[in-house]
Length: 261
Image (cartoon, rainbow, N blue to C red; front, side):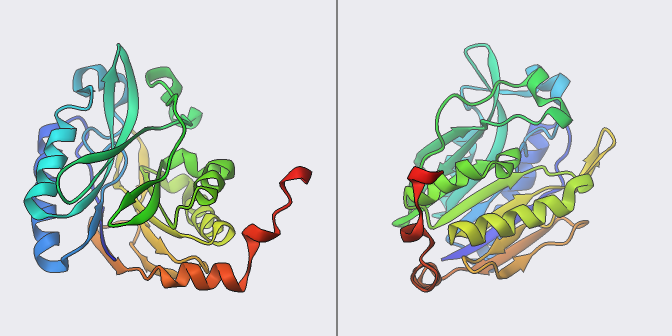
């Protein structure tokens, strides 16, 4: 299974321009890399223009959902659609979407954990549904958003539900770059799964973003990694046989004793 990850320099407050960037990038990535799955970062339509989100947010997932579904169908590629500001019933959520090759949205998720350091709770509403496992090309997967990475219970539940790959879409700041990297490694190792992340680069309102998008295997080996400064494509192929081998060699899940936790 081959991945192409867009480590994107998001244009703040300009959804139309960002959709143009994604469309152009995806056309290039499909032509050059022939990926099975592409991954976008968090809040790629607007950036963290939180006070202005009422002016820029989608309404019930539109137009972003249709835009990505059309691209998936056109290029016959699975899309992990990063996340975007999304107004539902008068509230704005940080919403994500997974789309299969036929252009069908098969999974939607609203970010559960909001970041107090970036004032998210002032402007956004936390998701009210569990993160769940979904399938692309027959592989069980999960999807979380940025700050969710700090909560191991969330990732462990996805692992227990059978996820072999979890995608982390983010706009993680440089100020906590080492946390970003170490937490991804920890989640991959402790859950014996692939972690595939897309983080943005650039800066807005005094906050710099860390890039360092990654593909980490279930043993904790970094298969691919972006830099911290450049808009770029990170590509890697993953073999799910690694997951089976690691889980057999170090049988963490069969050694769990939940009644003592």
